[in-house]
Amino acid sequence: MGITATIMNTATGQPIQKMSFGRMPKPWASFTLATGELVTAERIDVTPPAPGKFAATVQVWVKVKPRD
Image (cartoon, rainbow, N blue to C red):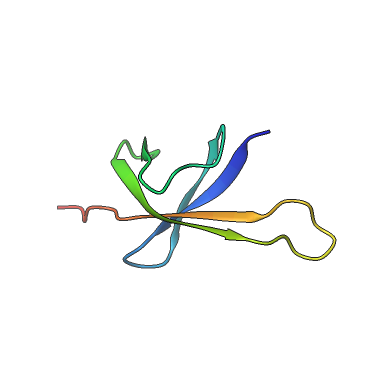
């Protein structure tokens, strides 16, 4: 079973995209966004599931370089 995580921007606090991982990513993991930008995870937050739900919420926080 894979992990679906929300990729969050550390500068703005806004979600960037949803991404699936084969297993829980490590805080130093590097991956490519849909825009083609290579980013490194800075922080990973796992929120317990809501009552009656099965899946926990996973957020991977990354720093995105500003566009020129």
